[in-house]
Structure formats: C-alpha cells, structure tokens
Length: 507
Image 1 (tube, rainbow, N blue to C red):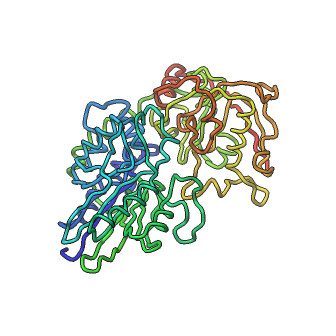
Image 2: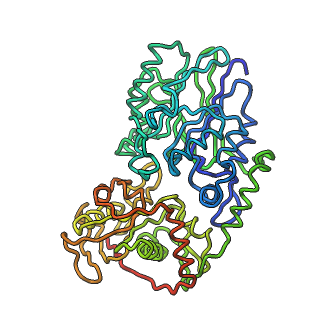
Image 3: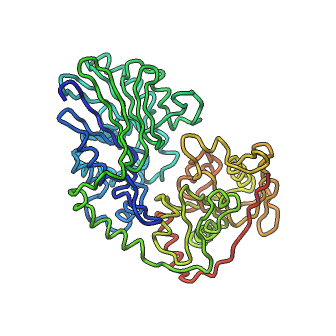
C-alpha cells in the first residue's frame, strides 16, 4: 500500500522450525515453516521484515544440528534467508555456541545485523543506527540486546565481547539521530523486555536485564520500541512510544503499520493458527534436517529400573523428582564433584524406563556446560537459602513465591542438590529457612569445603547466585550437560536406581 509502511517482526524463535512436540509427539501451530506462509499473506512492496534474536537454542532440532552434524548450512538461518529478512538483531541465546558460530549464522541469514551495543574485538556487530527510506519516509533503526548476557553465558563463548549498556546506548543513539538526521520515524529493536508492567507499573524485574519501561519512559522522540526476550504477547503505547512483544517459538508475529501521511503507528499481533499451512519451499529444504533429528532422538541409550517421568511438576519440585536424583548422580560421577545441583526446567518430562535422546532433551533442554566449583559450608548454606526464596506459604500450603513468577516462571532458578541432606522451613524469614544441613548425616560446618557441579549459567551467577559466581572454579567441561548425561547412561546401560529423598520442605 502506498500510504502505509509495514514492519513485520519475529522474535525468540528458539530453533522452532516445524512446530514439532519433540517430547510427546505431534505438532502445534508454531514454527518457521508455517510462519513463512503467514508472512507471505501480510507483506507487500512497502514491508520490512526483522528478527529480534534468540534463534540458536531451544529445541532438539537445533541441538541435533550443533552437536551431531554442523557440516550443512545452519537450519535456523535457512528460513531467514528464504524469506528475505531485511534485518536481524542478536539475542542472548545466540551466543550459546560462541562468536564463530554466531557470525556464521548471521552470514547465512543474508540479513543485515543491526545490533550496535555488542562489540567483538573492538568492532560492533551492527551500526550505531541506520536509515531506511521507504514509501517517501525515512525510518531510523537501531538494535540493542540486553547487556546482562555475561551473567549467564559461558565466558569462552563471549571472549573478546563487550556488551554496552542498552539503556545508555538507546539514550545516546536517539539523541544523535534527532540531532544529525531528518528521520520521520525512530524505531528501536530491543532484545529485552519490561522491568515494570506496561499498564500497572508493577515491578517485574529487579535487575537491568530488562529495561523497556525505562527506555520508553525516559527517551523523548522514540516512536516505536520492538521488544522480545520475555516471551510475552504485548502491544500498546507507553509514554507516547508504541511497543510490541511476541510469544516465543514462532507462534505469532508483530505487525507495525506506519501511516505515511500522519506517521501514526498502529500495532497488532497476528498468530499462527491450526489453519496455517506449511510453506512448501521451506518444507523441502528443511525436512531432511527434521527426519535426521527424529531418527536420532529415538535412539535407545539405556534403561532404568524406575520410571522417572514427571507427572506433577509442582509436586516434583516440592518433593524433588527422582529424575533430578539421577541427573545429579550422573553429574557427580562424570565430574568427580562431591555435590551436584540442578533445576527441573519448565516443561521437563523426565525419563521413562527406556531412556532415549528424546527423553534427555525433553528434560534438559538448554545447551549448558558443566562447571565444578569449590564451595565452603557457609556459602553452601547461603546457596540453599537463595533457592529457598523460590517458595512461600499461602493458606498453610507451600507454593511458588510471586517473586519467582514475574513475566514468566523462573523454574530454572530453583536448584535441587544431591550429596547432602537438608530441611527448609518455608514460613521462616528469608535467609533463615534452612533449619538442617548435613552430609552423610554429619552437620555441615561453615568451614567445611566441598566441590559442587553446576551448569555454566549458575557458575557465572545467573539467577543472582553470586555465592556460586564468587566460589573458585575447579574444572570446566566443554561438553553440554546432555552429552554428559548421554555418556553416563551409555556407561550404565542398565541403571539399578535407588530413590533418594534428601530434601524436606515444610510449611
């Protein structure tokens, strides 16, 4: 349309290409194979197409590519290339396989990277901003990603990378555009979300991981802020700035229409539906990857005497699902650590008695690596107290604290430890909830020292676990946690499993 410019944006695709439910079978209305059909129905000659990051982690499909066969083109890049994306902004999970793989992915998309606040070896990934003239209007774009990445990422994957403060970068960039350019519309593309609810103003994040509210509240002249990262569906206007955010896994697309006469911006969120058809071009290009992945997922690794599937996620956290016991035992044996701690991630399925790669990847779905830390007894207590903050008591029952469910549940920040025995009284004040802590029945002293296996996210302090970050590192394993689990199970193809009930939560 001559009197309208349209900006279409996907975000947080997380390797979801086919919409396959890899844990349970079947498929759901999501994925880039369907997204192309939706995009084709929405675009015209005055349309720009942008992706807002987090393509390279999240499904067995993308895990299979990175850990089994990297010889072919990156399947996460193929949809962006075929669909002709104009721009791509980088997300925090796009660093999960290191800068070499990230830059390869960016090249293969054929899209122009606009992430300006990430600098690698002194060179920004994208320009400070860019101007695009379309349908008679000049639009200024700048791309930023959350500077919180070093709190999560394996340091080896971001060696030589500097993350400039996203808020400061946005303030300076908008000011420079207004001073130097004659842009009709200024658009920020931000891989970050809201630290306050956009309608109520209630605090949803207490760190500078997400700063969308502050950016819109403080920066005059920013016409549109396109967000991601939190996986929420949102649209509206805040302090004169239009905004959008979409759900993850290519479930929906954000549509931004700019009236070329009035410059008014109208937003909408359009979902992929059950009626949305697979695009035949993408289907042909990507089906070989999918078939190889599905065959690999069904490979039997071993078997267990116990059924370790997760039937009730809440109960599985309150009483420690025994799949956690098995994983912790594997991490302790394979690393030589005294203790191990891991979380039951959102949507984790657990393992049936016959264990396959499908079971592993449906339970441990992040590409974390293993790190062994040396921890004192006092730091261990502090660590367990931090985990205990996940819970609260309501009407006499243990339930998840409101602080643990901001924009989306932080189940990955509740670790359950093995190698020790401990009791948590949830109704006690924060910091005073661990009322008993022993190892092999012997009380743990503050001066005791242990080694503990955790993932790299926790090792760098992810989830505000500074006591783990500050603990000395004993060793690091470059393999993914799933690879370690698979090796353990193949080493023990018939696991004679004994349940361990070492964690007690009381109201």
